[in-house]
Length: 162
Ligand code: FES
Image (cartoon, rainbow, N blue to C red; front, side):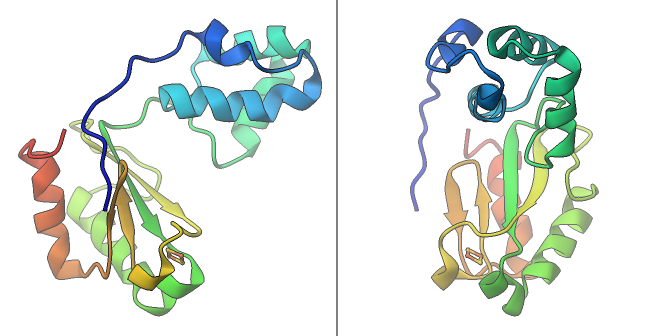
């Protein structure tokens, strides 16, 4: 398991945009870079992407809404990603997802009312030998069971993990 406890200051939007060429083909990589930096795509980020890539704002907005990887609202403080890839699915990943929905009282893709957690499903977390796996922020939890979830989430609810 690895986890970073120090949060680095975010880059400015200009710094994020700078490495990308000013053409339509840059739109998706730019949106990915902005979301990696800020956690979501703000309206301003969509506009700045359009300006930088020399395409209409409507085209950037269309791409941002078409691909499920993009988020248009800020995520919760902690991003819970539950794997639904083949290895995890075979070993109970769907049950872990259902349990997380119940425990957090949200649907997949939702954010808890207190803004603490956002829940997403992913195709593979790259640690199939630990299936079923869940990743919260940068920390991986393997062989997750329904019974283990309150304890795992409790670490974040108590602020044991920042
Ligand atoms: S299938 Fe779940 S980590 Fe790869």
